[in-house]
Image (cartoon, rainbow, N blue to C red; front, side, top):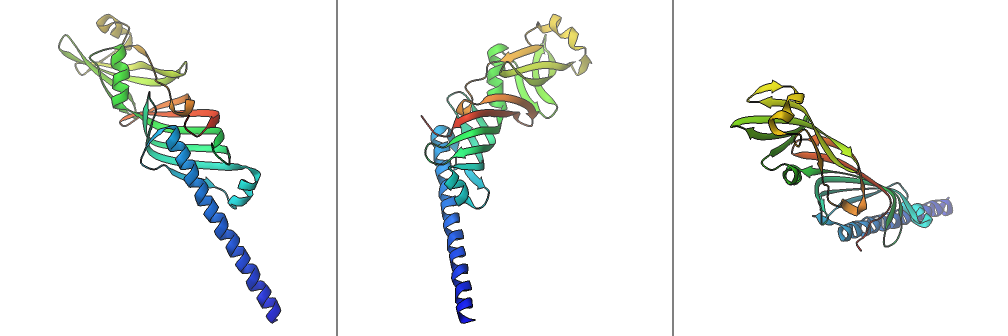
Length: 225
């Protein structure tokens, strides 16, 4: 009985040690991936990285992590800054640099950046996003012109098409807009700067304070140059 009890205690200690080692290496991998991401893009604060799945050691031994999730207050490249960012990477290789077989990222393009994109095409327009669309306001002969536009992905960039028009608080048909201000405000193609990690824009949705962009990519290197 004593030998059996000793064997059980020894086995329990081995299991506990294995779990402890697994958790230590798991935490180390999360820190490593966070460093790689911070080197690849300008991250505001520390990215919060979670390697999913247990045990971690079996994934590490296979050389690939099944699922890695990350969040950050903001990420930026030379071209664009996104806030409230979430990312999900699959089939992430172990080692440096980490590489994701697939990466899906969602972040908000703030109204300030959207405002600049619109002004490059149509000066004198104020932009404010809401769940029902992008609100564009300007003046025509001293009367406020308020437009609501729906954003969409168009040729890899952002298209904005007017769906509702109010002139001096009275709603008018969208077809009546061109004679008032021309075609430019009716349908805009916005120039989108380089996106983080070379990802591709696949969806865009209006939200309070900006546009919620969904990006994706395959064989993405999660490290700086």
